Image (cartoon, rainbow, N blue to C red):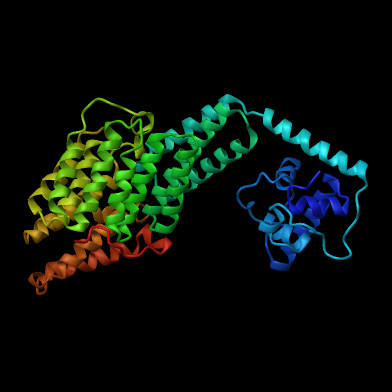
Length: 443
């Protein structure tokens, strides 16, 4: 039977059984780790993984250190090893060992049995139930959990979901695992953005969108495309952001919350483009989504996937700032703060509250109300460094820019406030990942 991968060809030529392959792999891992002073000297490989590598069913590169170890063992790139072999593929000279027909048939039969066993395998439903609960809990606690803790936990949940996908071939379970993986990737994208890493945020949102596409899950695809639109206008491409929002709005099964969120994002993108009428329409649309429709991601899970009235008001305040509408920005920012104040103690979303305060300060500076701006910012300066995500940092940078206006150039209070903002930003968590000052909310 024709080998499915070059790796399978080379293993057969050496006459290795799986235990022999594993011993060779472990020996190679020790040697590679010693050569590069790495910590993976105890790396090993399970038989199920080995069967996937040789069967041609791998669609992405294995995790480290497998690529380095396999390349060291066989002298070919890992991409070449995991692809179908070319005619005449052979092992390096001196390492070939011809299998007899019986051994070849035995290995082929074992591969077939492994494949059949994989197809029948599943995982306990309670494991998926727990994963669903953990992802939902993280999403709901997102705005009250320090960013680096969210990052650590979301990364762990994504890894669990991906591991479960390797363990089950039951369609119903795979759909649940893909959905959990998509939700986890979405949360990782959001926190990567808050920590100032736009490339990672983009990649993770695209990953979430692909997971949603695999299971044809409209709300997950809409959320991921909305996140991509948001990141895109931060990256200076508001026209592309509008296009992504329009795509997101076409997915099926969306409730009012999902459409409200997309309208808010569109308003921001149109604001960056200077399209006043379109931005105003989007703001109005965000306030008029009241059909009563719900979806299980934005509404039933909620949290970071939700978009409550306070977040709508805070985001619309930023859009008004882009339109240089001080009155609209101040009204929306104050509305956001009033709505947050009605929530029970201990549930106030740190990010929404302080972003609204920064926008309120900007609105007051547009009217040259320096004292009012300082009063709005006083609570923001108390935010611990680990909570100072990209949204807050960029808003504070925008305030700093406004304080450089000639009308404030000889005002001592403005100079002191500007220096205080610089100190605030220097300690921000977002700068730990090398965040840049991007388009953000600048007009």
